[in-house]
Length: 98
Image (cartoon, rainbow, N blue to C red; front, side, top):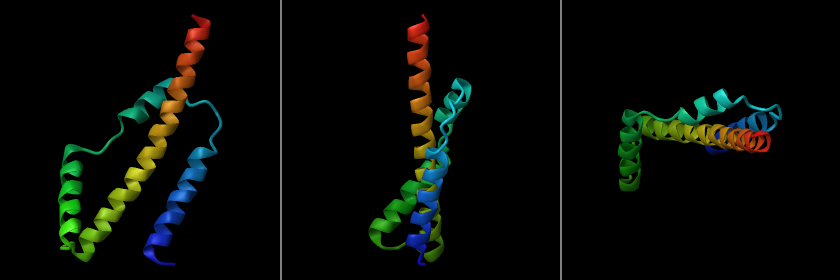
């Protein structure tokens, strides 16, 4: 299995794990998850790596780092999606009760 296949398999497993969680996510947890994000330093580094990738000058270590940022970003996206859904459900319950 090459690196791309391994990364894709890992993302699919994370999606299954997080997507299969049917219990209601508490509002406080959802709000916390929405605040989880890359630091400014990470964003700057990702831009540097992207520029080097466009120029074809990434080292092997930088390529591994860029792939890791991509995997973490994908997992963050899944977590943010779950949090948004929980907040939407929470808000609709508040409207019905209010």
